[in-house]
Length: 50
Image (cartoon, rainbow, N blue to C red; front, side):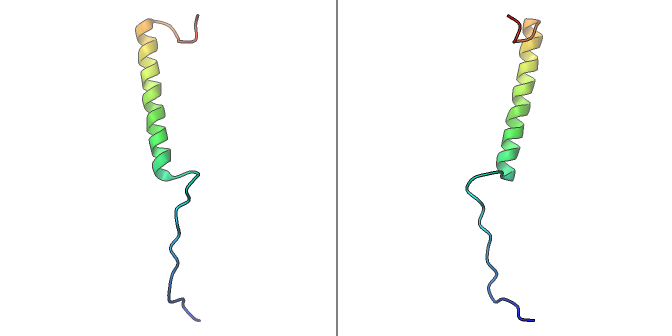
């Protein structure tokens, strides 16, 4: 069988899901959730109660 002499490199897509952006988004969501819990604990009730 003939082997190719040049193996093409795969370019990362410009848009869509990437591992580094998904990790960053997950970390931001976790920080936001913890901040929400702290705020709700400090004021004594949920933020959606008027």
